Image (tube, rainbow, N blue to C red; front, side, top):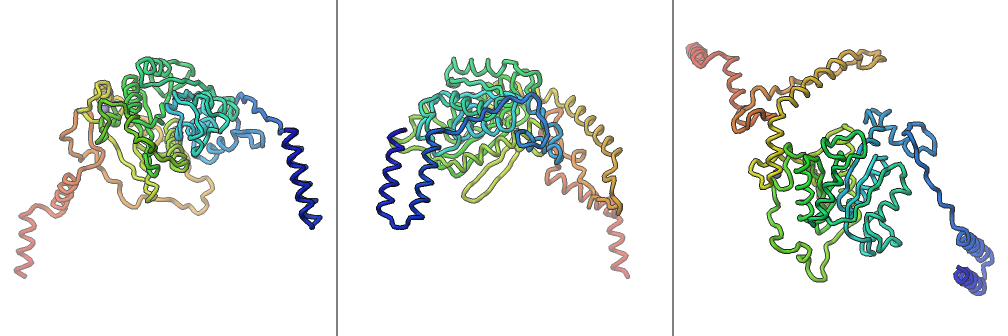
Length: 427
Ligand SMILES: [Zn+2]
């Protein structure tokens, strides 16, 4: 420190002797002295204390006021419930670390972090990790940073390789451990697993664990050229699992990492990774706090600014045994689930009807539907579907048949039409 201060003062003296503008020199000297005083006494580390209850009070010291405002804005009913949720982030790299930071800042209850790698200077083109953390395990470095940002979050660091037998067992055991009292995860101890890994093998391992546990998870990925990415919601039995629609090309019988060409490494951009982490956590928040539409699949093409979405149904011929078991269970439970859903919808419709839309609607303005909603389910074709399932929308040919039948019904039968035509021709 002493030598740096001396060097700075010497530089200032040199500048003084080489410049004739005394005002500029004195400004530079003042600025230099300020830097020296800052170097001598580094800013005090402000430690964020734990907060027992989330409050919506708008004061500068409340880190949750802007989040709780989502309730006042009518976006989320129950923001403080976020403290009841446990989320596992598998892979704490360019996407996972940013996703973990977002969840921490949002005040998630518990975060489980999995990675076997260490922080390297080569990671500094991405967000989150800092150069002084080089050499630390990614999970430990993440816990260090996240604890400072929000000490309310319960953080668990797992430096394990989930693709090994031992790592897989530890991974499954940690997912099953019940720490929080409320979860959306059924029999497991977590509400959601976010896969932020960078290879096919690790994705298949997460898929296997989640299929076995019946655990809902979200998958994310960024392409090797860094200009596209995707997220996907996987609910075992209900949506396609990762093995239901395997990629066209996969590594076979060799270690995937050896495929990387000598001296050539995959590209990565902090922008694409940040965007993918953003849409992933956005979808996770919507799923956990039950607001908005939770996308089943959302792609991102950076070159065309294109965000395709699609539905992904499970494959009845999936190669994953556990996936087939979950599909079977899902079909068996479907009637009970539909009945519960219909009852809940009826209840919410009744309670909505009893509340006046706007108590101060002095002009008596009301909004009406433009046209009748399409009644589809009852007319839909039921062929090619297992018992208990039905198509939500009519297929194109069903719609056509329905329409031509309606036209006939309106105009009487064909004989009638013929008689009307004959009468017209005769006159
Ligand atoms: Zn499957």
